[in-house]
Image 1: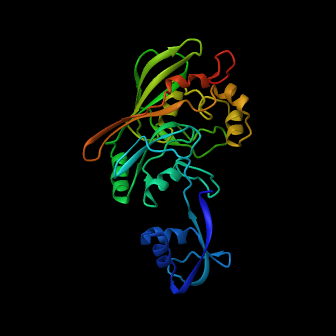
Image 2 (image 1 turned 90 degrees about the vertical axis):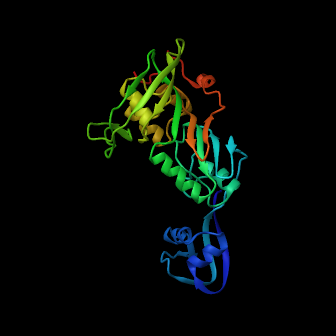
Image 3 (image 1 turned 45 degrees about the vertical axis):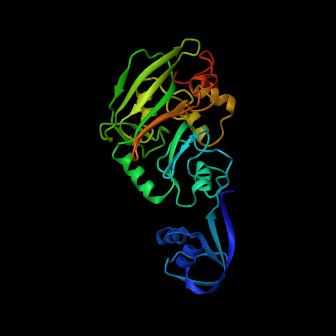
Length: 308
């Protein structure tokens, strides 16, 4: 379990943030965030005031990484690139999350290491992580100013034969009563652009392997752009399926068999294939996973009801 609660004895009175800094080798800002989240307890009660002093027995809840041996595809003194598997979170979404890629990142490079972007839990492929705070700031800024270029592969429903682009603006959905879509196409949304290049069509599956090149970084951008042109990504549990099926999936009430039929695949068939960026020299890193060969995870066209 990555988050653990451990007892400590503070021999003499001192500011709580200072004890955390010295114990975990944290910066003052990191220590104050531990306090702000209520993760320091006295007699079972959280203290939240970052200026409080402590003495005697306390408890601290903190992230203690537990590796499963997923080593980086590439790393140097500043950053590392992992192959993330479908179904693995990048960061724990609750303190009860049993495992995330952050376990590997922090096991290798300590508490100052961090993922510098996110990909959805069911998306597989390349994940870039920094080894120290200076690299984290630089790489996050590179994502924000779009100097890091990404490509994805996706197996989509139906036949696509020609390259195309989508510049449909994307807006966050604030009402889930009619649809479970996290975002949708709207003239009131934020500017978005994705280029698509079909690679291969499988007639038996009625599925096309498509390369996707996002030029902006909106939430679910590739997924909603493909859904908008009526070729949603196979296995998508939200875009392309019914309201009921999406709700059952989100409530963890959908069996694996029904998932295959309702969504067209056992997982979201989207893969982060490449990263190109400058960090001193120019780096171009390609995934080594055989995503094309994962089409065995797709439900036959006769059985699936996805996108119908």
